Length: 108
Image 1: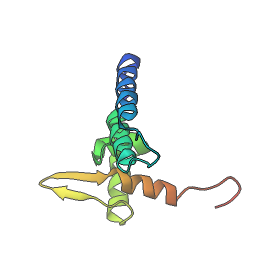
Image 2 (image 1 turned 30 degrees about the horizontal axis):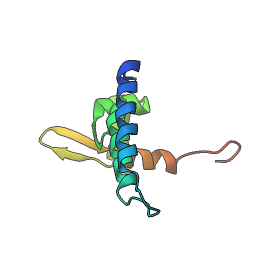
Image 3 (image 1 turned 120 degrees about the vertical axis):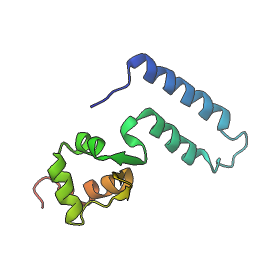
């Protein structure tokens, strides 16, 4: 899995904290755009958290083969978008599938 170099992560984190500090409201009311800004900045820190992923990226995240991804697609388990010859998967759909199929210890 791809990881940001430590210096680059620290630089991104410092930038995030500076921007968040500047955005905090000066009065008691919460800032309405703060959650959206935090989510966007986290997406920028995590290369696998971008919105649209290609098959190779999905393979790396899920640890599955190309044929396994294709079988999930054909079975209707894994939603996708096709533009030209390229297939894209929504990161949020993949996360939702993982959460939906989560098995707690001792329960199935």
